[in-house]
Image 1 (cartoon, rainbow, N blue to C red):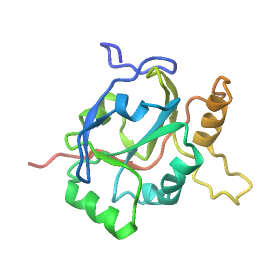
Image 2 (cartoon, rainbow, N blue to C red):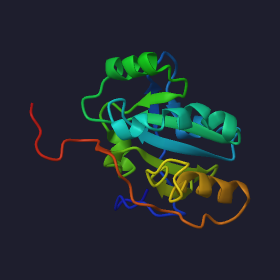
Image 3 (cartoon, rainbow, N blue to C red):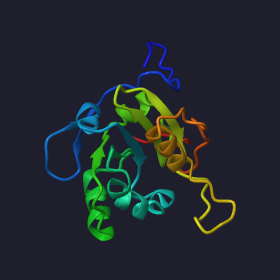
Image 4 (cartoon, rainbow, N blue to C red):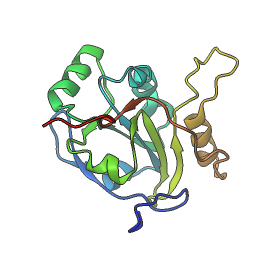
Amino acid sequence: MTSTNRQTIGGDVSDFELLPVSDGPPQGLTSILADHRGAVIVFWSAVCSHCRRYDDYLQQFSTRCPDLGLAVIGAREKEDTKVLGKAIADRSLQFPILHDADLRVARSWLVCQTPRAFLINADHKLLYRGAIDNFKYPKDPEFVPYLDNAIDDFLAGETVRRSETPGFGCPTESVYYHRS
């Protein structure tokens, strides 16, 4: 990230260290990238219905994309580890979830809504940011798997053809007011 807090495709993304929701040491971008060609970082919320739609996608991610690390970051205002832990238990989630309690990482990555996906290479360069897909179901003839297309391009050694898509979902912070 530059000092002007701009994020550009092909530019560096800021590193982070966050605590996992379940027990364990802090994990950061560097550890997520270890022994991988790149990583997918998804800013996520346990209570966002749009995020819930991607539970299976995220559950199967490491099997489908073993060359990529994955970090799902719980990033919603006032969503604590109790809420995240309940979602993990109730939905039998197996993917790694980190907690961005103060939204410091979400803000530094310019994330305003969940889900928001990022594909980066092993050198911390941003290759893709945006939606996982166009919110159509895979059997819909208009379905476009934005993130998977970007991953396919990257893993094939090609330039990512569509490096950015508009997001949709739930806000990470209240857009109306803050109450103490």
